[in-house]
Image (tube, rainbow, N blue to C red):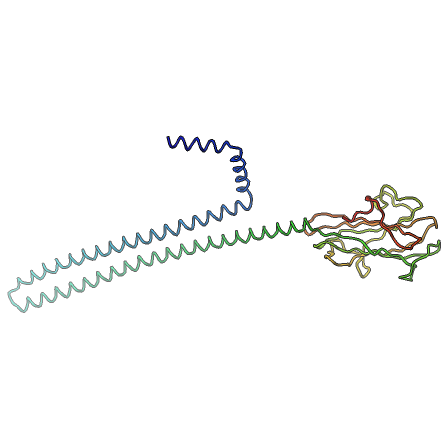
Length: 333
């Protein structure tokens, strides 16, 4: 009856939706990395506890049994030796001469004492061998427990490393590197810091700077910029993505602060301004508008790929650049 009632309760609980959800959660926990680590860790603790308790019990039982056996054996040997000595002393009485009787008794007593001493030495040696065996067994147990401790520490270290990696990944996911572009400027060739006058024969120079506003380093794969002149609005497809570069689109590649070509895969650390474009051009016509268009492709430390695109239009009236309000060109996250 009791067994049937327990079986019915288990069947009812197992069929309950909450119980099914709980069991599903347990299964998910069990197959997860953390679940496996916890199962192994508890299994090691249980095995170590069982081994320790069993070893202590076996040591105590065997030592007590052996001690009792050796004491009993020694008592039997002493009793047997006493009986034998009494018989031999009784046989010494057969001698008629008192001097021979005394000599015989002395010899029997001396032989008996020597045998008793040898027997005690043998018992001590057996006792020492027993303790040596248990000392070796305890050393083996300590070695086994040391291995379990090392494995336990390795699992703990691996779990801590996985937790640190997960936290780092989560931090990078929530706060990825973010490359922005600012300080787009132009000036007459060789006269940095002066606003240019847009004449047909005037050559201009300029630069644009990129910096990492995120909390993690960015690995820049490539960065290119186009100085684009047009007498119309920007085309639907960026000149950087056209199969054929337009006539009035001059391409420039990313550089480091020293003006050397940017090495693909180099890092741009957070809060660091060390990447730029240097460019130059000449207005093709007075009616043409100047656009600075560019994009950067970069990776996070976990390999996630990001893009930054930007577009600036030069306003001749107030001699400065403005952001182009077009998501196809301007996207800095």
